[in-house]
Image (cartoon, rainbow, N blue to C red; front, side):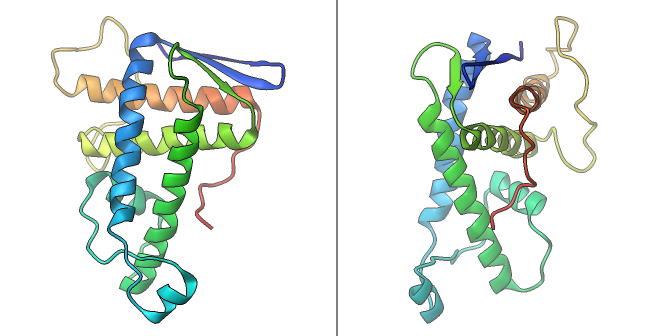
Length: 193
């Protein structure tokens, strides 16, 4: 139930399980909309923002998913202005990656064709970031949560209401790792800069 990846004619081809690909098709636009919603809250509120044409957040970050990503990728800082700049860089990168992934998502079928290293990298990072955000939002990743490293099969305890969320987190990790491994390309540390 993960994904079958191969390289065909210098293109990465990924074939998904139909159920999980439908879940991914439904989840990706929601993920992108959460990111875009935060960007829509940004304003150019001082002369420096106006000069740089760089809007910054004017309200505290209240999205559990985005806060999890900010805390995972950003260095902890005490300066509110610096935190806002770092958030703006991260959220812009998240949106750019999500847009690229959505532009390559096939409208039908479960076969994904990635032609460039940029597409593979965007898919890898979107899957990693969706895993973190989804896992934290559903309470299966984070402090005090057991690691999700077991294989999910018919013996999984599907009566546990958290099992579907654990499965989705496990699946996102497996797909990201398959794309990375089959592409053979080294992926840089996640950076907004």
